[in-house]
Length: 276
Length: 183
Image (tube, rainbow over all chains, first blue to last red; front, side, top):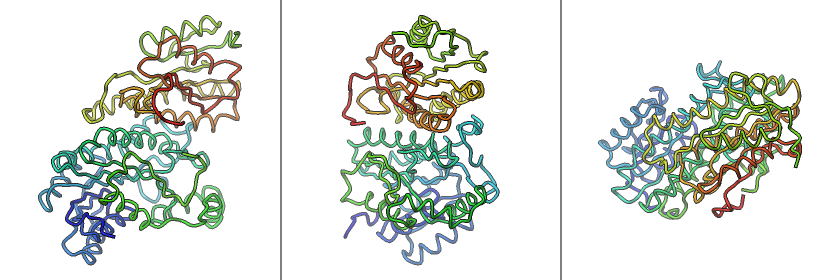
């Protein structure tokens, strides 16, 4: 199927690994010119080389902290100069680090009774301000072109909080991010800009794998036992693949999805039980 | 109706006329009203987002975003101070007052409170789950642009009552059924 997005320009935050990298790769495969941004140069180099191999000349990598509005503006400016006006903005910044020992920063996991109040501010920066800043930085180009696609990689906890895991920060902030995208969708529909939010479930990425390992240690069980419990609540009985996130994002960016906006769409294998 | 909360102690952390309305209704039920300095012995904490009518996410500065989100940080800090006493006595009530725009965009245009309310709605759901075994309940009241202070205060008082003892993680919208949302 022709998605009709060849030649468009995209910015993908968190684009060097996992889900972001899969999205950048899929979009580049559709002829989109993609700027990936992340903090670690070596990861960026690796991703850019892999994407360039399948879509030569379609990727540019920029080292940046996509939680910082100034850095976001700089990355968008690089995209404009290198490829032209930006039409696709994919926000994909991680929040609280669940395995601080592994990743070296972040407040880690906690419950309402244990998490320090100020960490809610930090999580707001990671998840909300990052997405808002990227959308705002791309908006002038989208409005001028009367075409745009804004898509956020959110979490299924936006709809139904994880009460079996110590996820108080994403539980509280993800719904606010979903609301941000719902509001933007309503305000920008007249400009030909769609805004959607993906509710991510268990997707097999490096980060996710390290999380299950951490959780197994916390609970004094094996990784297999943790996964078994998780998958028991997942009708499809398997983890998702980053490419399956990317497939939905690419569809939402396509000309066929011009009337799909303001939606929070789960990619969870059927996990969670709420109706809506 | 006797709400069964005479002698309970409440801290009402709301702004303007709504704060007065809530204090009046709770006070009339025999609830003792305390200030922030007494959060550690409160049985009831009522809080809410600051109203910014017609606030617009497309126009907001990052400072304004953070300013609104401080409502969450501040409420969490206050709730945390009250929680140990509530857990210890196995009775507590948290009630958040937010905007009905968090349910349907038609109800109001206060984007900044919408963002805060969505976070707090989810947080109350989790508090309800985590603290239910301690009989500490957490619920949300949503108001639209037309809701009268007295109507909101009555809903808040009901959620604090003994009769509401099996309600937690619930959202009660005082919005005259504005908007098309099914839930």
